[in-house]
Amino acid sequence: MARRGTPEVNASSMADIAFLLLVFFLVTTTMDVDSGLSRKLPPPIEDNEEKKDIDIKERNVYVVLLNMNNALLVEGREMKIENLKEGAKEFIENPLNNENLPEKKNKDIDFFGNYPVSKGVISLQNDRGTSYKLYLQVQNELIAAYNELRNEKAMQKWGKKFDDLKKIQKKAIKKIYPQRISEAEPKNIGEN
Image (cartoon, rainbow, N blue to C red; front, side, top):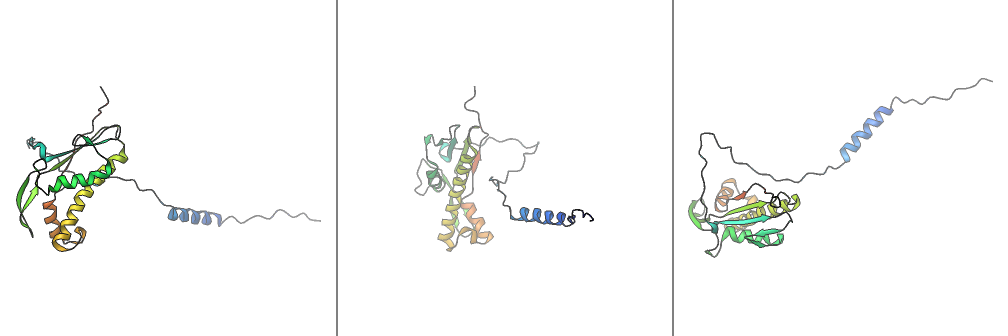
């Protein structure tokens, strides 16, 4: 009786199957997107330009501090993150012309004529120990304040949301509510 050998398995298509599985898993896997900030940086200062000290009155600056304990201090007082947007909106707009809030200067703006524009600047400073999550939350609240004011003005004037306006209309509203957020270099407050 002749002895038979064990049959061989044809493995030539195994590489194709492995490749198809690899493609399947690459296509169906979701990737986490890192959160970050989209900012347009000012152009660099030319060597021949002089650095100018800008004199800003204290009433025109809204001071927002984040310390190493992740506490939010606004104008020297502790504040909850949920209240930051409303506080920033009031500061930016100064609807009652409060003498403790920013001054306004009249500017000629398309569609609005001679319109009072706030001179306010939001100053954001954080400690190097501040959590990135809180830093992003504060940034989001400050941006949301500007976005809400712009939306409200667009609805009031044209009955449309800011994002639905034409480019020239958006430009006019941005002149009324220019985004002025100044960030200072983080400090090591806890160090000697």
